[in-house]
Image 1 (cartoon, rainbow, N blue to C red):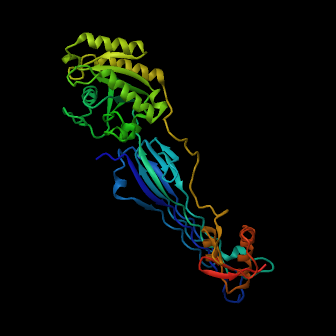
Image 2 (image 1 turned 90 degrees about the vertical axis):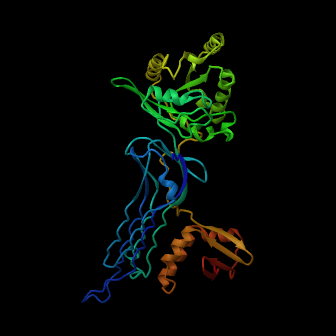
Length: 426
């Protein structure tokens, strides 16, 4: 089974909580704070493995979660940071943010790694909050949450040359004739249900990868036929070989097919339609109307296309087109893969606590929500005066009080912060 697009959930690990403890050694009855820091949560990392060819493993496992960091301990002992979660993907995998459809990473080289979601930082132990006036802080920070998001994994085959053509024009026969690939071949539409790759070896140190893309028909970009599933595989190719059936046995007009498929390429991506194309007029061994073949060749040549007469079944003309393909690949050199969106450079998703809150009014209450508030609440000991002062200072420094005043809060109004309610006092 060939799987080339999946949606999965990933979550980086949470940071461990800082510890609230004090030195309790013999002869040191009133020791200072000794709470250790929490460990960092594990990152989620995608790594390319050349041993993988499809995304099928993700069909059976959709949720991937890194471990959390350990909590800090007494005696200034920091918690252990969690191991990163490394997820293996095949070469040619594009990672997108499911919510925005923006590209996060384009992974092509074996062993290449990319951090998609960073684990949360560990919280600071109470040793960090001691001051000359607050020598025994009875609170510590909670660990930051790791980022959680849905990502789309799309596999785009890493082929030098892509075969285009309507179903049954002979693409699979061509691939099997010029490489050791063994695609399924039969005389009915959509025989090829998955993209097939083959390596064409002309001579020592001269070879290229050829991809047989399943039949693209009119309306493929909108979902007709099978082409809409596989157009993305043409995006990395340097050169396209457009195969037309000129035998006359299918009852189709080769020039009409040529226009339809190129129109589908333009609809999918304008840059894709600008890829270099050569045309192979196939099945000349069973063609009855040689004049019609010459007419088609002349028309395409006048439009600037290089045209080759071949028979994939008898191998007639294959050596000529393969030699020209190799020469064109050398001439074209490296090309940039085509994307509908620009890649988000160095985009690593991590929890952002710089803002991290929202303030709104609900009936007679003012409600404060957000990850910053969750982190803050986990750090506060409301039975300790110093801890409450720290809590109020954070609310002020982060602009929470200002937001409340912008909404018209008055002294004595009730403010709800998660499960806590308090009266607002200036």
